[in-house]
Length: 249
Length: 249
Image 1 (cartoon, rainbow over the protein chains, first blue to last red):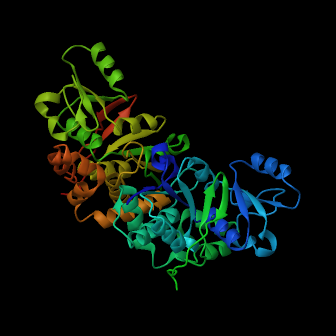
Image 2 (image 1 turned 90 degrees about the horizontal axis):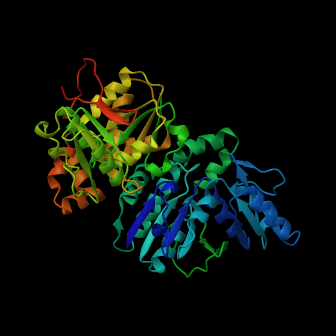
Image 3 (image 1 turned 135 degrees about the horizontal axis):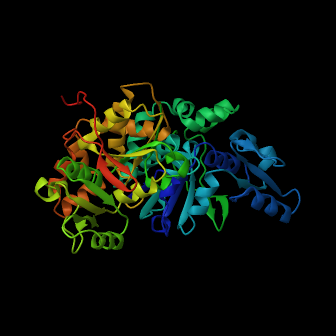
């Protein structure tokens, strides 16, 4: 299997996602938050690009059935029910609910990946679950898209992409494009302490500085969740997983 | 000094280049070839984006004063005097001449960098010369742009960017953005054999496959040339360098 990795969303081209299995990586924090929400029983998440589109969609849905979540510059938006912290998405709040989510980078990467065969939401917390899903579904080509930060490279996403590549390569022969090779190298440099990585990367320092240090700890919990959120027809739901051993078990 | 590194040209935004010192890295092969041409007495190089613009410009200049150089898919273009191999740009051919150059990635990155305070043409062959120039000119902010391949990440450019960062950081305190940190890490992984890197990266394998194995050897000659080509008003000329010790001396 050939694995392409786009280290920044500016690299996205139609040919790299069309009919491919795409793994979108946004460690801080959209993909982590989506995994937490799904594992707490959230029924579906609708990712939208703009705040205006999010509030408009919310007003069109039945009152009480949908929650508004997301951030700009890391902070919860005025009038929104939830921000972008994994810990906010508790079962009490999200079980059985629809969440309309708009974030600065993660939801944009999802929008740019339209045309993919399937889109898998990936972060450290559900890394092995995504890797097992890819291996079990025998996809022919994998494109890993690092959501980055404001169209730029983000180190934590590259390292997470490298961890995914490392896991997928354990189950079969892989041909790695330059971006995948770089991501794998960066993962091997940082694998011994993911929390240190999140504390030292640019966006991690920014989030800690505005009071989200606890989010870094949540985002660093490798394989904490056995869930694979998939995007289909503009909705994110949890994939039905077969039985299998987890990486951490 | 803060150092930003754009690992792929898709990351370029006006704010990252405007009034900044920009180092464009395109190891295979435009930036290497420009350094060879300049060190062999080429008077100026005019980088243009399209083949059409190159031929049109050539026909407007005095016959015999200008040469047409460049490539598409790595190969010399029909009717062009030169391809994109460093070894072609001998003193016999280029001394005192103007070269109109169009390449797939390098010249595009130059065009995208308009608005920069200065643009320095960087590759392994003139690495320390560029680093010394930056340190001597006391620039406040440096943006390193990896030209990549067809808008995508290319490992050899990231490693060369990392080598530049490593040299510049020896002469003063630097703050490294995520992309710079990643480039530096990738350089440290590959510094022991640049030629092996060029033989194993995607574009290097492609070039070797179409008969340009010798170009890889030329491009891997770290600090072979003491020249800093600079782009100004759409022209590339050699910067006048002060006296100083070279890295290899």
